[in-house]
Image (cartoon, rainbow, N blue to C red; front, side):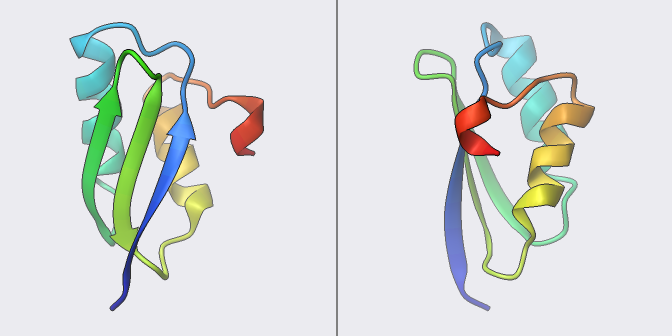
Length: 73
């Protein structure tokens, strides 16, 4: 499979609890390899199989309790 990356902007990321909640939720999506959450830039960078639907990753972030910036919809 081809690996690719997608970055989401999540404005409410502010602490390690946020980082851990988002990371653990997104890692449950089949085909996701790594999740890097940067508190300062509010960025969630996901490395995944090219066939993974970005909607599944978006839903995982929302299921963790966080909204994604409108620019990423």
